[in-house]
Structures are given as C-alpha cells and as structure tokens.
Length: 279
Length: 316
Image 1 (cartoon, rainbow over the protein chains, first blue to last red):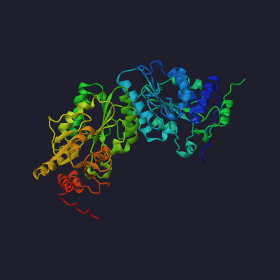
Image 2 (spheres, rainbow over the protein chains, first blue to last red):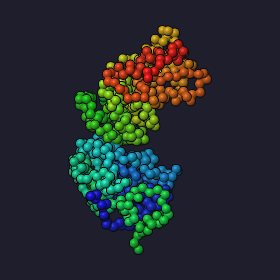
Image 3 (cartoon, chains in turn purple, blue):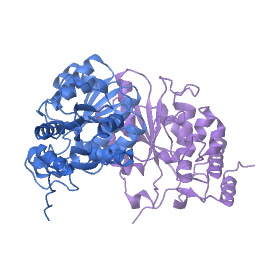
Image 4 (cartoon, each protein chain N blue to C red):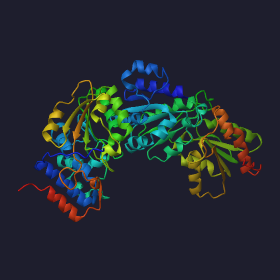
C-alpha cells in the first residue's frame, strides 16, 4: 500500500503568513511559479536568514559570509522574498518576477541576483558545488559555513549521492544540508514515484550526522541549527518534515499546485484569504 | 602528450597556490609528486564525474584554478550538463584534461572513443577547446591555461605522438598557425592530424600542387580571421580531424565558408570519422586507416578537388 501524504498542524505566525503573502503577490505579477515548493520552504529559509547565516547584503560577496545554495532552485519565490527583505536588491524587483526587465526568474541565477552563490534549477547541482565551497573553506582555514537546501524529490538525482559520498569522505563538518522533506514531487508522492526511505538512514550511511525536525516549527529549526555541526567530524543533514503548499489548505499536498501557470485573480484572492492574519 | 600535460600541472601548481588537481580514479601513481608535495591541493575523488565537475566549479568560484583529469568520453558525454551549467554558465576556471581524444582507446571500444567531444562542447557558450598537435605544443600551451577566464577543454592524444611543432610555433589561445604556405590548396587540421597534413602537403608539393597547412590547436574560439586570410586565395580546402565529420573542425570550417561570400569558387571536403560508432578494435592507427584519416587520403581528396583524380566509388 502506498503511504498517504503527511499531515502537519503547526500553526504559522504573522511573519510566516506575511512572507507567504509576498510570494502570492509575486505569483500574481509573474503569472506563474512553483507555489507549493516555495510554501514548503518558508520557515527553513526564514530561520536561516533571520538566525543562522552570516551575510552583509550591502556587500554580497563579503569573503567571510556563509555560502548558501538553494539547490531546489524552483523554490526560489521564497528565497527572493527573503533576499529582498534583507536588502540584497530592491523590493521592486520582486514585482518583475519572470519579466524581461527583471533579474528574478523561475530559477535563481548566479551573477544576476545578488546573494545567489550558484545557478540552480536543474536538480542535483547544488551539493557538488557546495562540496567545493566547503573544501575551499577548510583549505583556507576560513570559518564560514556552507549551507544547502535540497528536497526529497531532488535526492532522486545520483549526483546528490556522489557529492554526499565525497562530503562524508572529507568529513566536511562545515557543510550543512537541510532537506525540504515534503514527501511530494511533481507527479505524486515520493513513495509512489521513487521511494527514498529509509531516508535518514541513507544520509547516515553516507557519513552525515542527521537530525529530523518539523520544518514549519521555527523553534525546532532554530534549535537544530544551533547544534550544527551535530558531530565535529561529519557533515550535517537536517531532515525538515514539511507540507508542500503549507499555509493555504487548498494548496497543501495538492499536486496541481507544484507549479502553477496562468494563475487567476480568483486563485490569488483565495490564497490571500487563506493567509490572512486572524482578526 | 598526457605525461607532459600532467607534468605541467605539477610545475604550474608549484608556482601558483590557486591550482588544484582533481582526478576520478586514475592509474596508480598519477601525479605522485604533486600528491606528496601538495597533498591539500590533490584530490582523487572516485568514479563520480558529475560530482567532480560540480566540486571543481565550487572551488573555482572561490578563486581556485582547477585541473580535472579523466577519460574524455566521461567528461563530455556523462557530464555534459555539469559542464554546461556548473562550468560554462558560471564562467568557472576549470580545465578539463581529457584522456583519449578521438580513437586513442581503439582497443577498448566505442564506450571510450571520444568521436564527438569537440562537436558537443563547441555548442557551449564560453567554452574553449584546445587540441594540441604534440607534447612540445602541450608544453607551450599549459601556461596559457592558468589565467584564462572561463572553462577549457584540453584534448589529449595517445602519448608518444611524433613531434611536429617547435619553438618557432608560438602558442596563444584562439590563434590558428599557418605551418606551410601554398596557393593551390589548403589543409586545415587540429590535434595530432597536423602530422598527416604536413606529410600530405609535402607529397602534393612534390607533384607540383602547392598546398598550405593551417594548424588549429584552438578549435573554439575559432580563429576565423587567419582561416579566411589563408582560405581566400586557394581553390580547394580540406579539413582533417580525428573526430566525427559532424560538428567538429570540419563543421566549424563549413559554417564559416558557407557564410564567407568568397569571390572565387571553392571546393571543400571534410576528412574525419563518418557518422558511425567505430566498429573494430585494433589500434588508433588501424582505426584511422579504416576511416581513411591519413596523409594518403588527404592527397587523394585534394587531387580530386583539383580535378586530377576521379572520386573512388563508395563501398555499398
């Protein structure tokens, strides 16, 4: 029997709702986007940028910054909203999403978007590049960290596991992978398309120290990140149990919202209604 | 050529701390001295080429210059997307040292024969493709790869290839070198085929057909200016390469000629591997003979183009 999609009842605070409302506004302007994939990620990225990563948005290439790669590049709506809020580029760019005169497209691009360390979009590229970053930091005895956000769907790619073997071999304790573990991919559940279970055991077998958290629980995410690296001789994996589309009930676990084209005014209204602050 | 290339990586790395070497699962003892003297910049990361290219990109984005070495087909066929995105899109300073360009690995069969590597990499924006003629040219070429911006593909011959260049032939990325002048025909060659081109030109000269030779060690970016200067006065042009006739040196020359608007008519032929996977083992030399990538064939084709010989009927 194929396992049902997950349930998560963690409630979202005002900041999480506001970030999602901004994603909806970008969606409205661009007319398209990976909504479910972005909603799944909001708390992971929010905690990284609010509490964990070291950066200076006025000097995006500041050498001591932590390196961050959104390897599941299609979740970029959530990342763009945070980068704009932190001052990497003007907010006006958000409203030019996927437009010819904008810098923000359906996948993040290195060299075009301040704060983006690597162009992603084709899956399975982020972790190998991050291994290079982390090896370099160690070689240079630099203290900065390298963080990758991947997803369970992305982990279908063989290159993820080639890179995981390499990170494990080199005991890259300065490398952290957060996996948006929403058990959904484009066609169906991960259980049906390509079952990754036992997922945590796989990462452990590849040489990572692993913890699992509720990926929508800000306190749990903060707590786990505070303990990174979990083992001083291993790279870290945090499996973040999430809900694809989290925050709008009709989007949650709804595969039709993995990527949405030709979004209607009605749909935008419904999304914003779901994300309204309680009066 | 391969030994010279790797020796040069070691020599360059001794002088430049930005240089890293990454191998896949190379032969025992490869770059032993590099590993001993600079262990932190020597990486042997296993049969995981996609990851090799990605991690090299990561190092390059941090300011390092990374030389990767493994078999050509694995770098080109298997890693095409990593090369396109991680290297070309990011303008990463990674140098791909590709063992066995062409049919060097004849005894190992089609899985190891890089017959379309130039063609597929030639389509990639920002890619540079180098195919030197011999070990001496490799020695002159390698220093130019250090500070070049963007990825480079370095196509290696078999090793022990006869030396046909000398110090009088300089090396600059992006330049084609006239090795011999001639007003009746022009042979354009890349890589180790320079030797056959020079031999053919000498034979033709002996029978009164003045034949020039243009050596193209940088296939991309192609030195269009020098090519057109040498092509304009001659009525017959032949390309020769240890590569498919589709999309490689011959393809590049054909594209330029079609758009050149020559004032005088030209006759043109590509010599290379036909549109097949090599179907025999043997040696590089035996496969080159099988596909008629030889000095004799160049002579024959130029005689045909000059109207001195009838084309031979193709076997059914």
